Length: 252
Image (cartoon, rainbow, N blue to C red):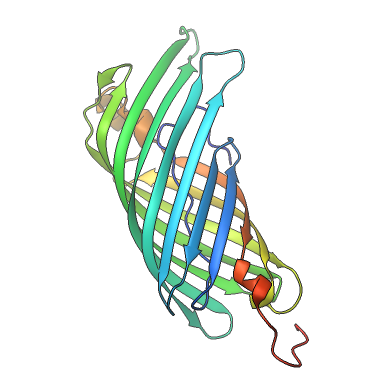
């Protein structure tokens, strides 16, 4: 459930916005369980069109060691959304961004000495995402998203030496549950809480394959490893604060 301290590639969580009509906006703050945070905003200027921006950052020092993890990244994207019946919301997004991070961690094996590894990476990225949400009632919804991210490295070093890797493609599914709190119908409630769990794996790479590990250039294995994350998010819907209920709507 936790992203460990030796994380080198740091995935952004999927978007899966809960926007269903034009002039709606959502602002989301999320925390990963390793101390990293995301903040994102999504807006629909016209029906079926999404505009999104997201930013993520981390700065951790492990007490009593020389381990550290710091970095930042952003996404910009456009997308679309569609209601399917009364319960389903589906959509897709695509975009680009940049990321940079510096990571140092210590490792040791049985009867082996402790060693420290250091990474410095900068990369540009492109991503595409599809998502679906099922609204069970005015309070509860659940769903899933699937993102593919391509990272193209502009700088990548391991222990101050260049790494022989120019790009990698990450496969990143995520599942989530949401609670929409407030009064009235689902669309009138201004606050949403979310718990999400996701994974990120490198396309074509199997970290359990010892032979693959043995033939990788030094420093590539930790970068390509699978990652798992859990996030807790709070979303605000400012447009709900100014929404007027239709005459006679009892919010049920």
